Structure formats: C-alpha cells, structure tokens
Image (cartoon, rainbow, N blue to C red):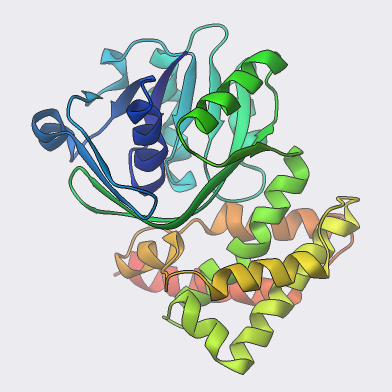
Length: 305
C-alpha cells in the first residue's frame, strides 16, 4: 500500500517518516517546508532512535500527488474545512483515510463531507514537536491506537495496522467510541488547563490544587462516557493517565502552542462537541463547561486584536 501524509507537522511528520523509513511508499504534502525537505530531506530526532530520510516524495499541492491507498490526515481540526479541496485528488474508490486528530465527533463530520470514503480514527499518545523546517523532535511515548469507523474491509484495516507495527510503532486496534473518549480523558483537562493557567503539564500535577482539579476534570470525561454506555473507562484509567503524565517530559500540548502563537484553538471538537453530546445524554460537565468558556474568552481577545 502507498501512503499520503496531509499535515506534515509534529504528528503526521513523525508517523509518516517512520513508515517511509521502514520502506513504505509515502508521499508528503508540505508548504513552508517544501523546498528545504526537497533539498535536505527529513530529520527525526527520537527518543527511540533518530534517523534521516534522504530522498522524500514531497509536494506542494495534492493535485500533483498520486492517488493513494491510505491518506493520513495530521491537520488541526480547525483546518478541516480544507479537506474537500485537499483530499479529493488523492482518493480512489477504496482509499482509507486515517484521521489523527483531536476531539469527539470528527469522523462523523468528515463522513458527511465524504459519504463513501472509508474512515479510521488514529489516537496518538505521543510528545512530539516540529522544531524547525524538516525536523521532528520526538520526546517520549509514540504509540497509536487505530479505531475502525467505516472501513469496509477488515483485511485492509489489519494491513494498515501491520504496516505501523512493522515500522516500529506501537500500534493496536481499539473500539471506536471507547478510543475517542479515552483520548479525551487526557486531552480535555491538559490542553485547556495549560492554556488557562499558562503553564505546562508537569507543573499542573506538581501543585496539589491543580492536580486535584485535573483529576476532577478527568472524572467528568469518564462520567460522560460511562453515561453513554461506553465501558473500559473508570477510576483506574484516570490514575493511569495521571501516572503517565507524571513520567512524561514537561510538555506543552498542541492547544497551548496554538495559544502561544495566537492561532485558532481546537475548542469545538475538544470541548464544545463532547460537552454537547454529554448534555444530550443527560450528563452535565460543569467544570469543563467553565474551562470551555475561559478558552473562548482568551481566544477572542487575541483573534480580535
């Protein structure tokens, strides 16, 4: 199978480069990095072993790329309105699109854009940053769970999973709804709280007051999931996420970086949509609703400037 990477940043750049390094045919869409990568390749500085891709299939426009069996989307969801323009040239009748994106409800909205396209959710647990043109800094973790949303052929889904594993990526198959809400247990507290308090993950957990608040926010996410009949999330999963973060390199999540650079934040799929889904199921999330309001206030202040 051949692969396309749409959104070659910290996440798409890492997984796409790992696949290319393992011998898979991978085509990268790039804009600001295009000329640099064309001339110099991609460098991945990784805690699991660094490597360099000398010759990269790199393009500035998807219209110039071949149709691909698998398209990995690593864009922020704030750019999903561009997907009809970006993805259409890459698709054949059996293409599978893997959405490595944050939030709840992403696949449902993309499926409305592309009713016949097969979708897979990619849930990445990774600390990674693109520090300069053509360079990805992978700090820790790096696993990814794949959840079948609408892939019609289980053999194709299994082959994608196998390619990830063969590339040295810890990858597993998980149920869709459970996977999305499990990711939200970490994403909803830490993305928003690092913005609201202008800090990093480690400092939130070192302070007893904010450590308890993080646990309370995680509890709201677990409660919302369980209220919808989703199993596999309980108090032990909260402790697992907190312990994982205790051992993580001090980290600024993607929303904190967007805030720092005055970019639009992924508030809709990370907060508004899951809060709405939980409310419709009869489960309020008051502390996360307050955090959502704070994020909207902070974003409005700099987007209007």
